[in-house]
Image (tube, rainbow, N blue to C red):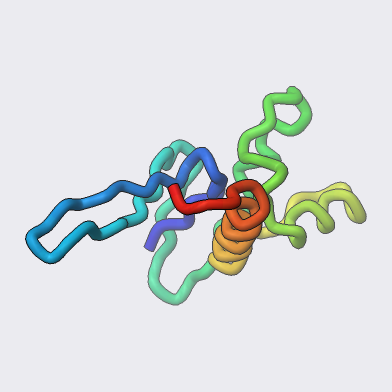
Length: 107
């Protein structure tokens, strides 16, 4: 599988496919710059790519959509935690909340 490590509103696209049965909306995940391949039975990588350039203030990843576990681990202990599939899924929840709060009508 693939662990994206930078799921944010800017990396999710929705496109519309026009078919004989109507319009179908599909989602597409883009920007795999920080993604890594994980093997079967593994759900994490060693450290989140966000922290690799932390000391050079070149932040990788979008803080607003970053999983709370990653941020809490670093703020409390000063060390990065392992990025997991659950962290990527949590980022999708934050995107959903963002969309619900920022947009008030279809389209």
